[in-house]
Image 1 (tube, rainbow, N blue to C red):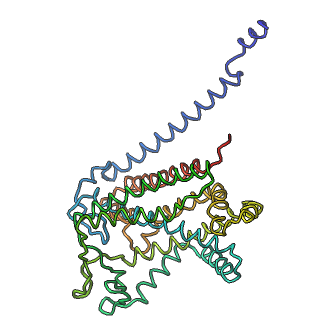
Image 2: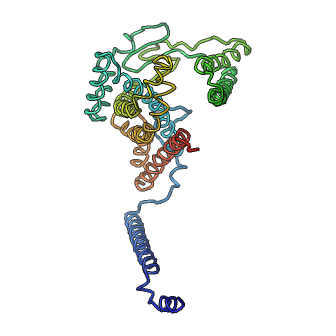
Image 3: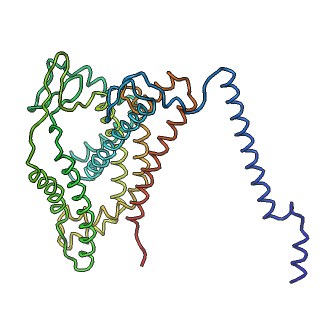
Length: 392
């Protein structure tokens, strides 16, 4: 034994598998580092030769361009950093709302595809086939043209409900006037969300121990509506509305959803929901039919069978591919530049055109969308682990 160890210790380093693998990996890492250094120095030299500034100092300069939509106050006198922040918020807005609507619509279409009603099932199948086969960019152009070509001008705006107007300038509707009570109402709603989350965990544990089903949905709905409503009443019940009114060639007051935002949101939601519907359908079909038969033999209604038996098991199949589709929706929002919605890519492109610092601008775009994707993926991975089967 000692003789074998002595022989192994005399093996040259280049013949030892372990050290040979270490040497090869270090050599590959060194080559990648040299290539990166060469590219970086070459880029810097070319930029210096053409007298192009480098660095992110331009972010503090005045932007000198307007942005049509903004969730925060912004003017052309603000810096490029604030302009880019406006673009980030606009992208977050359309992505967040789009994800919520996509999951809801996709789940509904996926369940409808499995309906025993022939008409409902075929309509869901046609929806998924048609929407999946049309490129997302063409759908964005289609909805954008619908809003601008078919809807009337502001002077002839449609007024389906009091305080709501629809024209080629967008959807304009009344909102409550600003009041200090609104902040307390928001906090009450958040408190309701936390209460509902804790209640759901308690109800699940109670059901596992006793078998008794707690009416989670109705109680949750009552909490989410009741907490803000009670806060509103205690704050004096402010009810004054900011109603839009036609002034000149456009409406003033209220809140406006632009045609660009509406077209982008519709295109992203309808396109991605078609893929989500197929994922939901496949997840439901992955659950053994014996599970449904067992639930029916216990006297459960179809709605409870779906919510308590089928969906909890199907989610373990649905969540991984659903994560990919939600990431695709977030990344496809960058196509907003094609229809004029001021998302982050659009604002960054304008910044690049004005400053000439394309490398920094593209790097910011990559970093922002990487951050969006990592956050979405992290949340979905957490939810996936929470829904995974735990072996006992």
